[in-house]
Length: 164
Ligand code: ADP
Image (cartoon, rainbow, N blue to C red):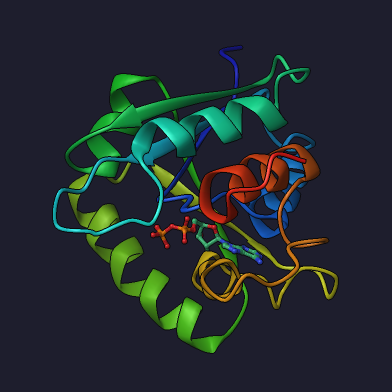
């Protein structure tokens, strides 16, 4: 049987405990999870592509079943290219659902052989979003419990000029 590969596409600006929790739970469902950082020239990000990829790699460095890649173009095309039969997405709220539903219907139209699997956020992380984390960073707030510790240290070093 061929391995079950899921592609978790996103911007990860930056990766948060919301993302890591979805990925860790997905490892019970799939043989491998490929985190695909989408390159979107239309989207302004707080952190560079290199930083975002590096931080994901740092967090999952001891998990051989998780890898991180970058991609351009349609997500379903990239999924096909890497042999991923599944896309993975997280759901926090009704607006998340509405947003995902439209993309899912389009993806079904474009590529019916790729299915999207959704995991609902747990109460521990459902309030976390990259958007809110960026606000906390902008206002120099405490990132404890929002992003993994190793990444937090690098974000502080990058944005706040601190080294510890
Ligand atoms: P995008 O720009 O594609 O929305 P994100 O990096 O913001 O990329 O999110 C990638 C995926 O992670 C999305 O499916 C999003 O719903 C999910 N996600 C983000 N934060 C959480 C969270 N706290 N709980 C569950 N899923 C989450």
